[in-house]
Image (cartoon, rainbow, N blue to C red; front, side, top):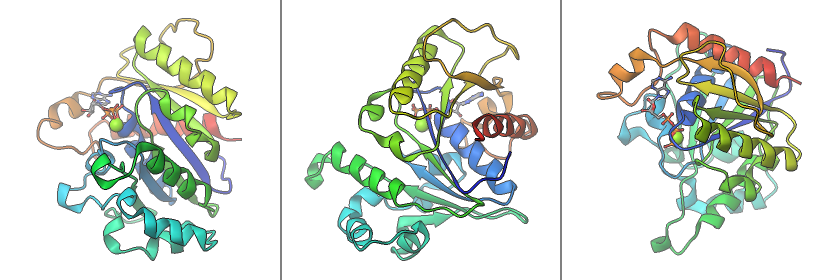
Length: 259
Ligand SMILES: Nc1ncnc2c1ncn2[C@@H]1O[C@H](COP(=O)(O)OP(=O)(O)OP(=O)(O)O)[C@@H](O)[C@H]1O
Ligand SMILES: [Mg+2]
């Protein structure tokens, strides 16, 4: 991967294709290369923390529940995410365990503002956009956003503030059609760095249908027996026997997104 000043990536695609898993894998890969990584869970199902191996009690409080606080920080003109988040009460972001040689991985959970709290999904999305647009990254820092499934969030402009989009799909026409639609919408929003990651794909060189908008294939991740076996008892997708193959897929994705 070519070193460049910061990296803000979002991970999108149809429901259940592996977006959260790939976000966790990319975060692990970048941290293993010494990057400090912000993992941003922008999905309402809040599963990125579990995928990264956190126990339910260690998942931070969603920022959306403290919108007043975050808005007041952003409103004061802070331009670095580090003071923004480090300053917030500890429960709003958590650091993942840091193996020797790894960069720091911090998890931010955006969450949804539920109707009972008097908010709406637009407020939560505005908050995500505000946080993303105010992140000024150093050269070995990265932000990875695990987006909600589907294409709706693209209409809300979330990807305006990222440098690259990883579109995840399974090798199925339905999920590839969603991937193509995500790709088309992202292109329309001017996001030129888009790649396709094919997950749970047994073939290393799959023949893909010709769908306008489908991003260029950057990596194929096979069905992982180790993950199937583990996921009944453990939410983490990290530390699998298949980790070396996953790391090379992550490297290929990041290379393909390099400017
Ligand atoms: N390559 C793989 N092999 C086997 N199982 C996988 C693979 N990739 C992901 N999974 C499993 O598939 C399930 C869905 O993955 P994941 O939660 O990452 O998808 P998602 O796109 O984030 O889903 P959602 O749209 O619900 O947020 C999880 O149980 C995950 O452990
Ligand atoms: Mg998910």
